[in-house]
Image 1 (tube, rainbow, N blue to C red):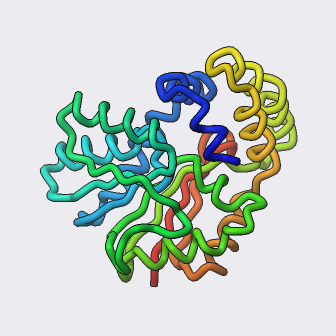
Image 2: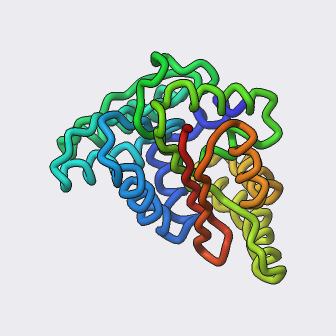
Image 3: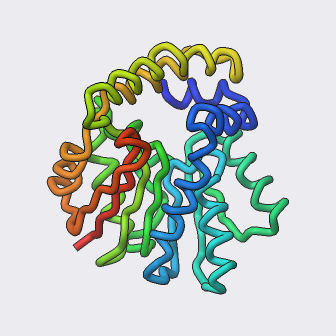
Length: 234
């Protein structure tokens, strides 16, 4: 279902919608995730569920800036999004490998990556998803020992008033904007519903721990509506 929803959205409209619904903050969040992933000077990093490749490109820019020899790979199941990401990286002269694949059956050997990054797709992998355990197991499989998983995801604001405002924005505004900008109100109604019902940071931390990750940290942003998670494979 998700593949069908996303493939119906033009990649440029998808990017515009990301900027609009996050008030332009998502670009800064991706840069922060990229810096966190590259802090330990990894050799191989995967942008999982990369969409149109914004995190992969941010990783490649940061790698160039630091003059590191890190290899960046972006993986997604949506061909048009990958094509758009490929065009972005070519326009900027960024070295990124683009792979079409299923996150439940990653086309990589065991211990292929030092780091995995995800921006706002962890929810799609784990929210009421019967394949949730398979996705997490695959992340662990392709990570090397002490490899890092870093991802930004929506969260539940702890303050009741902020939580009410956040949910109202999600349920009333996001589907409307999605319908206007992408002409796909259904996809953004799904996004609004899954976001408003998604786990809080404590529950995500427990999920990661149960899956086998350790050194789990959760850093809140935007009044607790967004969280940066980091953890490692033992």
